[in-house]
Length: 430
Image (cartoon, rainbow, N blue to C red; front, side, top):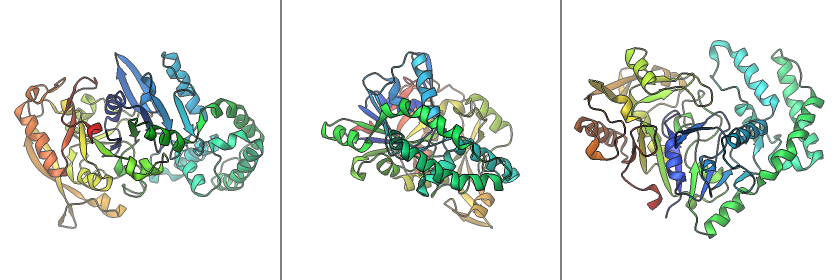
């Protein structure tokens, strides 16, 4: 049986939570391999709603091992809050079922503060970050001055790393009109949180190597979406990590051969949170209807998502970059009742037709969607659990999407309930 990687194939918020939960029930180990607590999944299990940000989705299932891999930046205070919230819902979370890679870089209060200071200073040019410190933490990781989970076991390392951070952050803060960091107060906070985080620390690569030896199924869980990838997305309106499937290996400590089947999650339409180009955005009744029906608000931020028609050009590009074998098409039921649906099949740029999303920010902002119109359907697809339950025109819509993105549908989701899923191909079967 293959290991499975789940990645978003749009700009995040594709409904990965339900799909990952559906798959995690069949996995033995669930690994989060990039990002921070700026992204989240909402899981609905037996009418219980769990909102996760850092914790892998497998944590809500008994007898599953959850691993936060080295590619994740961890806010220890946010992690402890999330653990406490789940424990309050009756979920067991302790060092027996949760491991945090000891080489994860930490998000400290100074990172959160710098994130907010920069966004305010940018004014109209702001990126639209969640202000949770993700970007500044990745910057410090790459600059080799980060404090990491394993460092918390050594007080001299804490002091050494903190002073290196302050040598960089304080002049930057002052230059942006903010006060310097209170060193002693921050040092006290770090020392207080260290013994609460260290019990979860592990060498994630060893945990996963042992799982491999035992023949266990591993589910690698990505956050955000491929078009938010720091290299391959709509730069600079992107996240600060690599969100593509290949990061599953580097972000958790396994070889690329262990990645296995790649499942891309995509909505039957398109949404985006925050700033940046969005060729198929509908600033009209269509966009409003999609947002209302789809309950399009961010799991972590609560921000309203921008909504528009399905962009086959963008998703096809994500398929290629992400090495995606099959897609899970979500929220088909949101399209019920539309007389006509449009799908973006190409872009116009300077009068020329192109079939790709440019990497240049100026060109990204100027492309215009070229649409193909498809017949909608009046019958409900909500709760459908087989192809026979779907209207013929809904099936035609799905088949046309498969053709345009050159990738087959493996799973089809017709409501937030996990049972309302049509299985076409089992990702764990390889």
